[in-house]
Image (cartoon, rainbow, N blue to C red):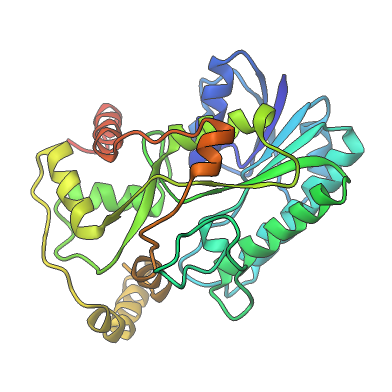
Length: 327
């Protein structure tokens, strides 16, 4: 098939390109500005934006399927409004362009952050209520974008389904992502203490394969939770040590302490003209990280699988060593 991928230079996007090429598909790759992750890949490159409808026409032309992975991830709010704009108008424009071009199916990448984590004592499944404007900007933007897509699927404007990955981790993380930065900082012993809580982590190769499986197997208008396994940050740090041999911190600071020093962290970031080392969004996500995400639906219908976290982290470090990022 000919498959279009938006956000193709991102972490999930470029791994999707790699797997699709390996499996014999033709790939149209839409990237915004930096194509580093796509260099030396035999894809049809298109520079553009999901916010620019005209740039989508040549990209989507001839595609059987479009995988919409374009999004702005933010743990720093949305002061300029670009997070909400990209994550809501982007899906709207992709829908319109795909319908006009006769695309057969859309796979939309949402996020576990699109829905409420609490109550933590109940299993986290696909039917959780959506977050609203009262929640963090990124979370609300993903909830809104997902609902735009689902409304089109369920009213038969076009066939499609939604996938919700948990925290994506693994190799080919070029930018890198927030979790990729944390892994590098662990390796370089730049993390002196751990935040409380934890999250559910899934290898980028595993969710990418499940997304590819959803092209044939995903049912119209359905949502699939692509989660892995939950680890506290203390457990996560222990696995980093096993995978790398590098000693990691084990002291966990309480949530109230981290929240209390946030103003100083923000001030330090401003003085250094850099992003704060952590934000209220980041520590809240860890505090509310759900310990029981149920991915049975994806396992049953999409053949979703989850490799051990230690293998993922070891592969990440091996790849970064080959690139010369770490020694």
